[in-house]
Length: 327
Image (cartoon, rainbow, N blue to C red):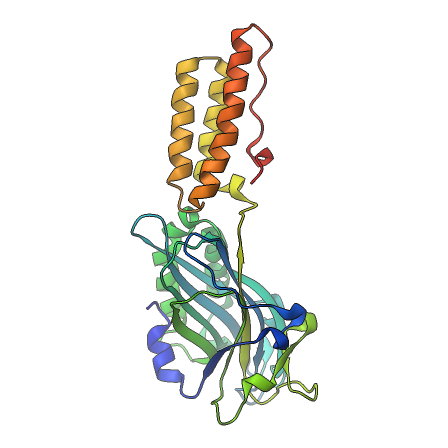
């Protein structure tokens, strides 16, 4: 596993991790199995509750760290690391942490699910202010955004520096506490809402809890909020289409080269640029094969139409913007 495994093994004693049935969730969110190459996977942290862990007026920085691993095209493993300090959690003091926070933080966004296991590590830490300068957290947060949670090609260069930074952040020399977390390997991926709570099955019957509306707070059967245990609620979702495919960096670059080649009216240059664009599409770790082929078919048809128009001495058209391609 990633950076979280050792910490979780030491700190997690009586924690539970459960799926929530559709009847327990807003809008009756069903659990649907995601098949290999069957969709784009997204994971979002929806809410969390932290309880009072420090006395007095000591300020601390609550930080959420996630480490996700899944297979991508070929034999590689894509890793996504996210570090965040939600705006409404910054510099809380020890007397004002007993609350539910609606986070809605994207940890993974529309990444092709190729099959196999998904490793999931999400932790909420509280780090005392005098043991860690806030600029360090800010730096890691910015690096997370640069690495992204959507494009494998963008995330790869940031994997190692982020993992090293997180190790420093949660190292033994820093006074920190793991409030709540999940460290697991999912071998069957299904959509829906999940809860991880610092409690054991004898204390809490999760089947009798439900999610309250847009706040994603846990409530009992009488409608009262769960107050005695820290928890996180997160969602796994899937889509059969990737609406932002035209933003994938290497695909956008190859398509721009193709558009320029079309403007030259040089058949050899167009053929070369089109073949390169096809290779980039079909080998992209950020697209399912069916979508890559669909995109190329539409682009290929228009390129051929434009080049045929040029042959009969009509004014050449410009190749359409990539975001005009329909999936």
